[in-house]
Image 1 (spheres, rainbow, N blue to C red):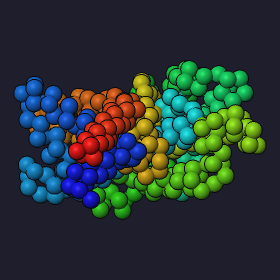
Image 2: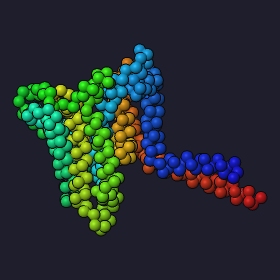
Image 3: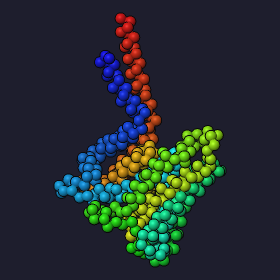
Image 4: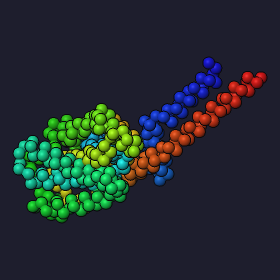
Length: 382
């Protein structure tokens, strides 16, 4: 093999990776987001090194200013990541069925609201109280998502429109329900009883008083549930087939209506679990929501960056959680906290151009192959 051919094979290998490997494209998207953010931070006269020091500090616990380690940063990182991973699964599960679930935020709010309601009103039985709060939150959000799936499958109602509308219904219904809980003011409910929370003394101790609670175990279970449902079950196969071609799936005997309703129900369940974890793990009281927490909307970006796979969505959720956990720390380096939203927005914009990247690298590959062919023809002509 000539030197020229070897060089071309290396170039082809790289180009093939960028054309066909979704993971490589996701990494490229994240790197582009950081590159643009670095340039912008430098342009406003700040030192962009602070961004990367913050990221290292969150991931390792090492404090560059004090020169010591504090595991609390790592614990808080995981705590921020949990609802983003779960809301990412909510979007991803629906996306596999060919649906665009903009309603993850509403499903999250329903789960959060039901968890708060059960925490404040259910009999105070240790363990059972928390289990019932989480279970009912998941069921309620599942039903909320299933309604959208039914409207889509039975009446061809756009899931984008219906989920957007149901987000606002969920928000204001949450306010009405929460305000009806005895002892609630315009801001918060009474404190949750000790029998209903996801606080863990063990995790609180080993992570040096971080926000990480027992919700991490529920999140790990959810990751395996998503993987098993999507990749190892008939339901997952039917879901993917329906998303790929609904008419072909119907002709193959797949119950398309039930599959779509089931897909949206499971999607809602993941978001509802996120709501329960935030309600019972991050707060000691119920909140009267004045606005949306935006976990559901961030979950859309998480799923797209993670290519809707179990591992990819988990890693993407941890990436977005990393950025959120680092907001305050970035300010200590003189970097505006808004840079986090900027990076998230840039990643979303770049991921939307995924097809454009593939066309770009495909064109480069085509030109190089044509150039090699012409070069070989000229040598043979001599």
